[in-house]
Length: 229
Image 1 (tube, rainbow, N blue to C red):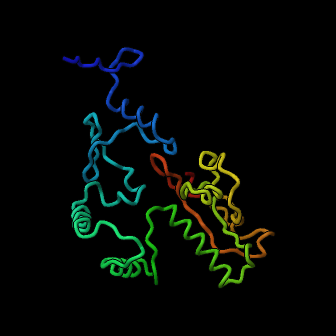
Image 2 (tube, rainbow, N blue to C red):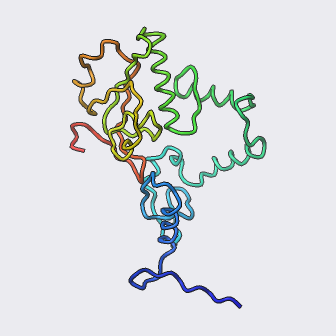
C-alpha cells in the first residue's frame, strides 16, 4: 500500500498553505502580465467571495471590472445564459441568429446610438474606436491620408495590444514592445492648455482619448486633476 506524502513545508518548517501552493503553481506556469492580490478565490455569491482556505471577502474590486457589476452568481444572468446555451451555444458572424437583432436594437436605444458593435474585451473596443476616429477624420473632416492624429492623456490604461501600449506611459505596459504605432500625441492628464493645441497639429485629428483610471491589475484608481489624488 502507498503512503501519504508528507505535506510541503516552508523553509521555516511551517506547512505550505493551499493558497501558497496555488499561487506558486500559477506563477510558475502562467505569463506574468497581471499582479493579482494573494487571494485564491474558490466560490463567490453576490458581493462576497470565499477563498480556498475558507476565508470570506467583501469584493470591493468588482466595480473595477464591468463584467462583475451585477455581482457574483447573479441568478437572472445565469438562468438566461443556461437557457441560451441549451438553444444555440455559438454561431459565427457568417450567419444571423434570432437574438442578435433584438440585442443590437435595444442596446443602441439604451446608448442613444444608431448602431452598435459588440466586443469581447475593452481593448477591442478601444482599437475599434481608434479605427472609427481615423476613418471619420479622413472621410468627413478631410484630414490628409496617413496624417490623422489622436490626442491621448498620460497615465492611461486601455489594454495591452501593440497599438494601445504605443500611447501608454506605463513602462511596465510599454517597455520592450516597440517599434510603436504612430499617430498619437500624449499630453498630461488634466492639462487643458496642452490638450488645446500645439504647433504641429495643422492637420487636425480624429479624436481625443482619455481615461481617468489606472488599473488592469488587482484594482483601479480614479485620478482627479486638481483634487490632490
